[in-house]
Image 1 (cartoon, one colour):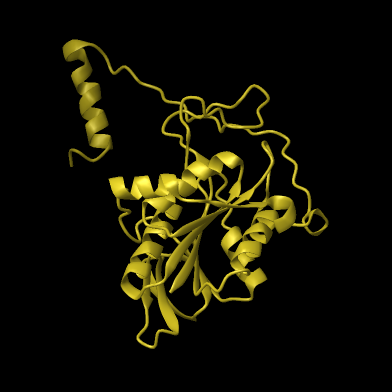
Image 2: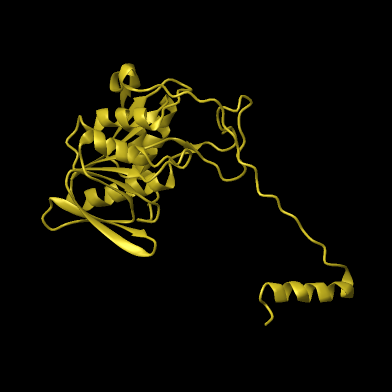
Length: 258
């Protein structure tokens, strides 16, 4: 089974988000970059399927030259090959252009399965997987939390939970599936894996070759805005024994006392 996994270089944000002075990018000086948790699970799922059924795992990313770092991290986890569709520094790419660029790679190979994260952790657009499937003319299932290749080897069952109900879809291969965090527990890269990834050759494809400019609408960023943090307020109930009646009232209000 030959599998293509699409990943995206996104900022690693574990605390407060700060923007650059021009409000056009996230300031990552103190954070760095990674791939989305959904995509980590997509890579892990692809490697597990290849280990079980044989075949290869190729990872592809649309982004700047620095995205090579994220591709090598995927190679260290067990991916066989990597392709970088390289964009110019500071280039903003919307879901239409992203899907078109990924399509150029997916259509060039004979992949039985294309996996993506359900959504990127920075934009949360939920669009690229569906748009890519449409361009490929393949069936697609989204938000998947379990994948099982069926006995015939020609189809797979993809399951997800929706409002407390488990939905299972049977898709013929080749197909496209977007997975959610929790479908598996991604492994840690081994030392041999890291060394192998460091020496690996990453195929580079210029984005101008992958996506003719005339075919893709231009996307222009105006600015970013960090949502206002919820305001927190503390109420002083009193001091010493005088605060006890007010404290009892609060406990009764929240249901501690009948």
